[in-house]
Structures are given as structure tokens and as C-alpha cells.
Image (cartoon, rainbow, N blue to C red; front, side, top):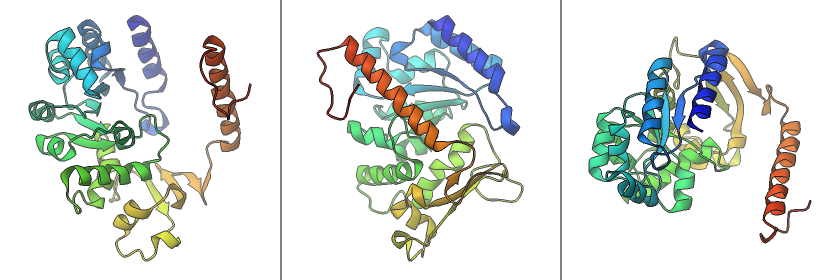
Length: 288
């Protein structure tokens, strides 16, 4: 499986890395430290150096992972990943919810980025200590993981969860949360000239329609949008000077056909599972 996975990474990198004016960035990935041997993590790091690529790994997701690595390796997840050479400014570590203060310091000292996924974190009743991670030196970014939330909901959830954790009704600010989702995301991928509007930066931006009842009055636009905005408020999106969405319509994909195909594929997968596991209860909305 390791050989096949590494071969797939090589193939994907050779085919797509640097395409679309350099906008496609193919990195290397290991799933999680409790499911990867030291040999595999070493091969991933070697491949990362060979390809000059970003690396990512799920790290300290749940306390069960921490217990498993302590049992298997006799160390914490951070110590294990550090021992295998993965900690570096080119690492994006997802989650980082179950860590000690000492581990946060070690991760921060490496200059790694942390991709906080607040929606699934809330679902699990866990939260990354964003303030402590930032102070330790980590670059905080945001992601959706496998939840259905759009990035507007992700930004809001990240801000609310961190405020609850800190018991602070004012910090982090909406502007800080927006920076996690925009400028910091670019930085984590090694892009220094994107994520905020400035002369000579990349022409990437979204247009938000503030003529919506829930966004009026827009006295402090970023705060208003982070607290009350919806994905449907995004009217247009430009990337590298190219419109991907105008007037609320995606220009690069056939959304209707993709949704039909997604429904077909999903129901096929569920049907296969129910055929293999007839004892499972079929939800009322499922029909062969």
C-alpha cells in the first residue's frame, strides 16, 4: 500500500503541479501518525524533499490517537512526527486538538502551519487551542474537513469556538478569523502575494452583496460578514484575473449535472454497503 500511495503522489505531482499559472500545488501526505510506520513517514519526508513540496498530516485529532501512539511508540504524536523528520515550516498539520502545552511549543518552534477544522471539531466536542498555538509560532489556517460547511460557516465557527474556549466575547476578532481563512491559507501553501488586496498581488477576490437584510447596516463590513454572512451572499469570485463565478453562477462547472452524478454515485455506494451488510438499518430516505 505504501508503494502504491507514493507512486500515486509522484504521478499526481508530475501531471498537475504548477498547472494553471502555478495555482495548482500538489503536496505529499500521510494520513495520521498512528497509522504510519516510521519507515513510511521517512519515505514521505524524503519524497517531500525530492519534490520540493508541501506536506500534510492529520495530527493529534482525538485522544485515542494519542493513546495509541504512546502504546505503539512510547512518545506523543508530536514527538513521533518530529523523530521521523516531518516537522518543518513546509508541514500543514490538520486538527491539533489533543496536545499538551509542551507539544504546542514544539510544533510552533518548527514553524509548521495548523489547519483547524472547527466544524468537525465542534461535532467531536474538541477544540484546538488556537491562541496558544499562534503564540507558540504556528501559522493558523482553516479548513472544512469532511463536513458540508462552506468557508463562511467555517470562519464563523472558528471564531465562536475560540471565544467560548477563552471565555472572551471579543477575541479573536472577526478580522483575525478572516485572516486565518484567507492570507494565512496562502502563506501555508507558500504563496506570498495572495490572500489580501494589495498592489501587485494576485488578482484573487470575492464580491459580496451587502444589500441583504441580514447584512444591513454594514457598519463594519468584515465583522458584519463574519457574524451574519452566508455563502449565498457571494456574488462573484475572481482567481488570477479570471472570473470563476459571476452573478451567483459558477462559470467553470455544470453544477446541475454534477449534483445528479453525485447523487447516483452516493446511492450506488450505499446500495453496495447494504448488500454486503444486510443487518444494517436502511434510512427511510433510501430506496434502491
